[in-house]
Length: 303
Image (cartoon, rainbow, N blue to C red):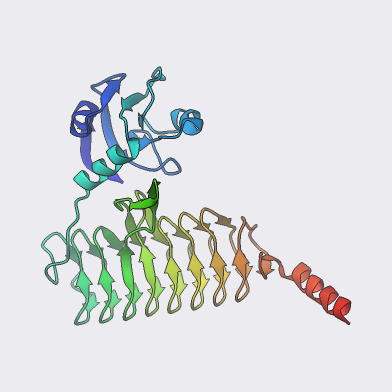
């Protein structure tokens, strides 16, 4: 998540009640999780074994709960509860904005696009040229839709990330500060759900086609010209390459990478990274030829 304009770190520290260790005149340009951080971003860490990883990341500002020497080129914000501080920054700069009218003033919809009745569009939404949004679609805040996009009835774009911080016996939901970005020439079938990122973007690549009843988790990236059949589920932060084909009811766990032109056959379950250019089947999904050999061997053993 990027701020509309850079913010002095002293101002952020005052808003969350943190002590600045380092250059208090530093400017923050965004806030992100560790796997998405860039120079100028804020991140947090509250488990000591991850401190070195955080300090060596691209993040420029780190919220943490232990006093440490500040590395060169970074700023530390000392706070007793880094998660609460991080979440409060998201909530302040990406406040909740309910849908209260059909076309809010700060949305942008090209005149060539067709928006059917009973479509709900939140604030800060952009819809490009020649799009067709069917009835009963909901498009949540900060969604970017390119040109020639079709979204069929009942689909929800930009639902909150299913992402929680466990505190004792309870789970606290993070404020979702990310977006959904749908590139040109995408088709999304009926009854799909696409979650926004926690702090980054969920992306559907140019030319990709999604069948009905598909779920895309927070921060997932679908490459260009992919085909996803019905009831596919993709976990958060997973990256799917270009020209990948996922047949019906394929399930892919979170934080994985699927290479370009991979084909995953129906009802397969993916629990680890897969190379591109191969056909996979089964649970856990392995190369289809090897899986078929395994199944044939098992049948012979039974006899």
